[in-house]
Image (cartoon, rainbow, N blue to C red; front, side):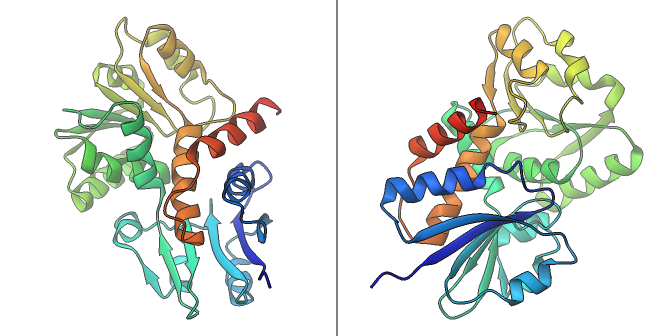
Length: 275
């Protein structure tokens, strides 16, 4: 007798999320016919009530903004990776009822870079200073041997990024957003800003750029990514990150040793192309 197993992505707004497409593609490829994956519009106020109502059919949750920090007090255990950036994007519901939080964005970033041949760099630059920027710093702690320069809009954001650097063991320098084009001298640039923010920088891409990791996936390509690619630079996109972090979520929630990366990516590409 099959037992229905449930998982879902929570956040607000959530309608745009590709997570259901990716996870359902994995279930189909793995033959997990009794697994379902939904999306729920949940804000911080509604989160405790939602989590309290979860029964034994639930295997896990994916969390997006604004819930990655808000969920932490509701958990029994948080991984070192998630604790390092105070952000949980994955909750696994154990059979004994324990709720365990993890962050697959950080290893997802590392895996996405590795897939493009980026294992180690001497220095790096980050555009922006939001929640994704702290995850990027945590990834760079394992990828970047030297300093990281963060280009930010305010001294408050600069201080925040330097604080994350100290906490994560990364040598972080900060610079004003007006000088953001200087970021492109670095062998690896990670753009963590909202859609449209980096468009004006597209004209400043150098003749021989290194690797750009742009965490956006819709719209794609961004003006910056298109200009970068046009100059022959290596591109890692937001869909790469989304797929790699989802692979890790599927493995944690279902217990399979290896989630179907290719099938998940193909499903994500098809869904984006249809938008």
